[in-house]
Image 1 (spheres, rainbow, N blue to C red):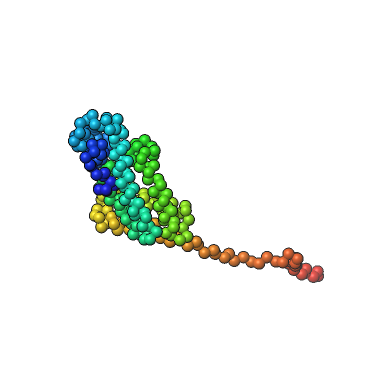
Image 2 (cartoon, one colour):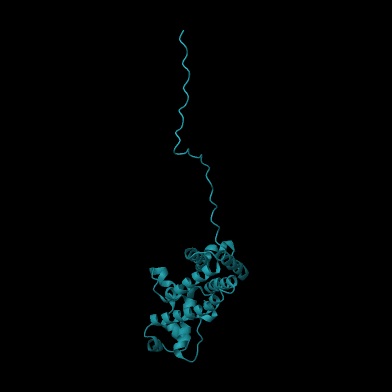
Length: 233
C-alpha cells in the first residue's frame, strides 16, 4: 500500500469521501473510523455518506477496494517484467509489498481485518489477491528450469510469508535491527528473491550396494567334507 494506493480526490464528493475514509483508516484504524470524522475530513455533511454509500460499512468497503485496486495496478507492472528480468522484478515486487505495509500499517491490517478476527477470507483483499499469488507461482516456475508447480508454490508461500509477517508484526523483530533502514530491507527482499529463483537441488546420486553373487540355479553346492574316523586299536 503506497502513495498510489490512495485514489486522487477530485471535485466529486463521493471520491472525496473515499479518500477521506482511507486517511481515517490509516490514522485511527478501521475500528475508529467514524462517519463524523470521515465526513469532516472530506468537507461534506454526514448526510452525504448515506446519500452516496447508504452506510458506513459500504463506504469503508469502497475505500479498501479502491486502495487494493491501485496496489494491484502497481504490482501488475512488476509482474509483467518477470519474464524478462525475474530477479529485479521479483525483488521490486517484494520490496513494494514490504515498504507499503510498513508505511501504512493500519490500512494494511484493515485489508485483512476479517481474516485476523473472524477467519473470513471472503473480503476484497483475499479475493482480489488470490489470482496474483497463482500468477506469481506460474512466473516463478517459468523462471526456474526444472522447478515443478508444487515446488514453485512452496517458494511463493515462503517469500510472501517472509514479507508480510515482519511487516504486520514489525515489533517482534525490532530488537534485531535487521529491517531498520531501506537499505536493510532492500538487501532482505533481494535475498528472498534469490532464494525463490534459485535452481532446484539436484537429486541425490544412487549408491550401489555390494552384494555377493548368487550361485547359478542349476548347481547344487557340494556338502562339506566330513572328518576321518579314528582307527580302532
